Image (cartoon, rainbow, N blue to C red):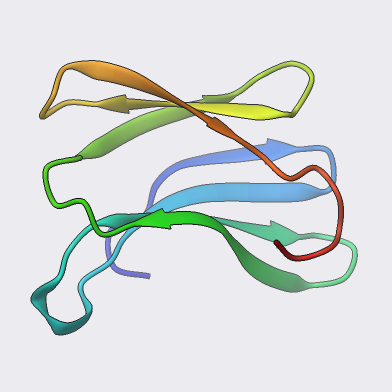
Length: 87
């Protein structure tokens, strides 16, 4: 973990946002940990260095995550994969 943000527990998953710092590229990734199977996966990622995610929340249905971007002053909606399989 580099700079984790906004830990959220939803059902059997623990979600968080983290910064990508490999090879000076920057960006962020949304990851989740399955509490039952003890496995971690990346839900989505972006190497867009202009996005600065700060906080997030997951919809009541669990199919979307809303991410606030303090740099661009917007809220992004990302669709989640709600199955146990990888994307």
